[in-house]
Image (cartoon, rainbow, N blue to C red; front, side, top):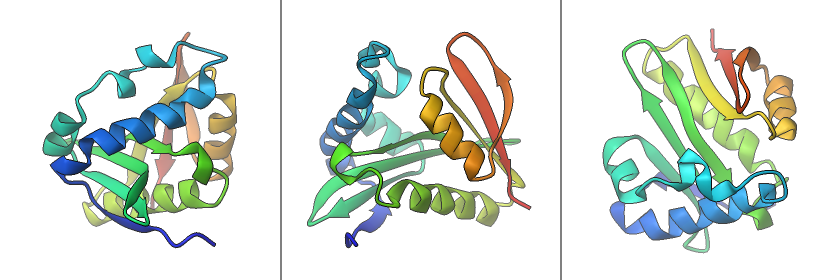
Length: 148
């Protein structure tokens, strides 16, 4: 098992977090132009300043990121991405559980996300972990998980 460490992101993590996100989403380049995805068109310094953001490290290297959004009525998983070298090792499930605990701690009874409609394997994983599809359009699948 890999010995990873999760912590709140700091501004100094922005470049490494962006690189991790790009590598994670590059897995989908055969399906879509990943550079046009909203998570890749953001300034990660702004994200870290504006939202709860966590990074996962192995040997002081960022290998995953989690960005949450807490609004008046909704808790949302804004972005979750894992470096390709560390996918399939339980880190995604760990991060989803972490996000759920954060939402529960803040008093939310559910958490939302949107994923690309062509990321069908992600939809299946989320379904398996208790998420339900609320809606779908040409590009996105909107999902929700009840926490209580």
